[in-house]
Length: 118
Length: 345
Image 1 (cartoon, rainbow over the protein chains, first blue to last red):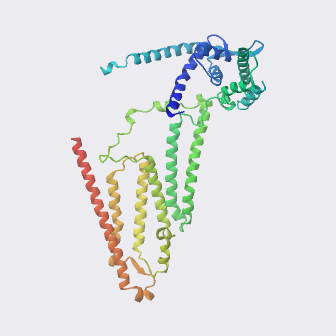
Image 2 (cartoon, each protein chain N blue to C red):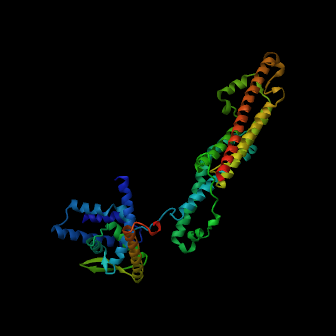
Image 3 (cartoon, rainbow over the protein chains, first blue to last red):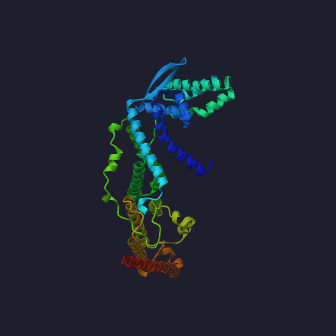
């Protein structure tokens, strides 16, 4: 990997980190267990490694944003996750923040000349 | 499935004991679902190679397990700048205190200077020891703060108390375009100054350090140095100690970037004093006979005069060079001050 590629990869990961949390919280408004959550996100265009997603679920649960329970499904015990009431509030705030950032970035790209420079 | 069991067993070894069964059970359920999905897609059980590919994609057991660990640092990013600052100050002060002990206290405690060399060799070990203790204290603080955040003073609170008016004044720009001294350069100067003084103090006991193999000639020659050299020697030691103390204070006060030129001139001017002292010696007696009654006829008289006059001539030349250099530097400072005055108008 060249220096430029390495740099891009590092920035890309940094950019993705927060967005992935947002996507996971949003997707967990409906109950999922780890594997189906990963499949659903992939079908919507967001591929996440298993080794990233499963520990992330644990972390979000420790932070009180998710709730989980063990339940049998298809003759197998699985751990199902869903958004907690605190998680719902945080998700709403994060979505607002994300949309504001997105709108600002779009605006910067659409109008590169700042009013101050006129 | 044997490969999956082996994989999960390997992951389990690196997980925190309290949660490992729960994590492994969840990981197993997720991976078995994934394998089932693949098998129903292919319409057959996975081959050994396909299973290996799947596990390889999952990641090595150490990496997978590490992601379940809470993020922890020996010294975290919030504490690290403070750690680096404290480490720098404490190591510097340890060097200063230890230098004072070696240069000032030890020569009196051990008149034969035998302990000085051993003390010098102990310096790196002592500094590493000090750095290790500072690091240990910060690691303990980080450990405690991560587990009991409510009991630790918030670092952000310390940063809130700063005031813009307490910022240091702008550094003076050197009109000659010289780069300001770096911290490393300033520390190196202090360390070299300290070694220089230790070397000077060792010379009376071990003249080999100054003259090398020539010390044998000094031992067998009928001449010895006159007492004036002791005065000269202590002047040199004193001047070096003063310069070292000044540089150390500059370092401790974070003012090492631009040493004041006036101070450098003062040091050079004071440096002329011991040379002038030698030049003012009555009858230019720098070397005397070890045994005047026995050697006066053979080595005294004209021979001794030639040696003493040569030493005097040598020091006259050195003194002239130092004075010319001093005059040049004073002229340079005056010229710089004039240019600065012109630029300010």
